Image (cartoon, rainbow, N blue to C red):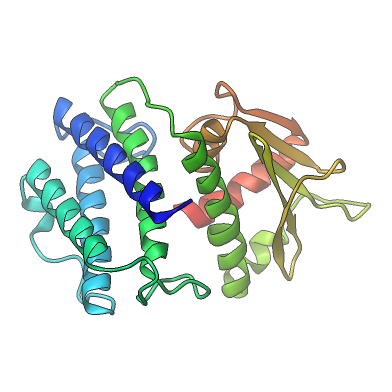
Length: 258
């Protein structure tokens, strides 16, 4: 996806998120984020926006973080200010400009444009659920891109970059006598294969016929499933294979998306 498309999606999802926040009391619970209220969700999103804006503006991680008193500010004005600062930084720079990120291969503003578009899409879903509003579908192109981000950057990259944190988890898949450990994720016309092992976790393009587990459905439904924003029986998502492998995949995803 082009940066302009991410920014378009970011603007729409932020508007829907803000509108959902405005419809209910700050104390409303967020069913997809146990223990959170709408106020917690809104402050979290604002903190994320302000944090990324500071990184782009200064070229370094802001310390200390978060700023004192942020959570005590009126929620909707805080969200508006945070979003405004983030968009101002995106406007002031080109997508290819250098900026620190947690993803080694991509140290550019483009990384944060993509990440903020995906972050906002998921939390917009959270806000709509908390407000008991119909959940707006994630556009197919953004959703498929989000599936790729979860699998490639959050799962594969973090497992390889910090292997000591993932060695036991990645190797803790159900007993497998014949050595096959593939998990296939299919979102629309695209598919990825997760290949976990005690020493390494790899994500390959395309699917396999011998997978222990297959998760498939429309891109938006699969994206929500990967982020734990819907149950295994959610409309549009089909799981086939060993339930133990589904539990194993959920443990992996919880580790990298929490």
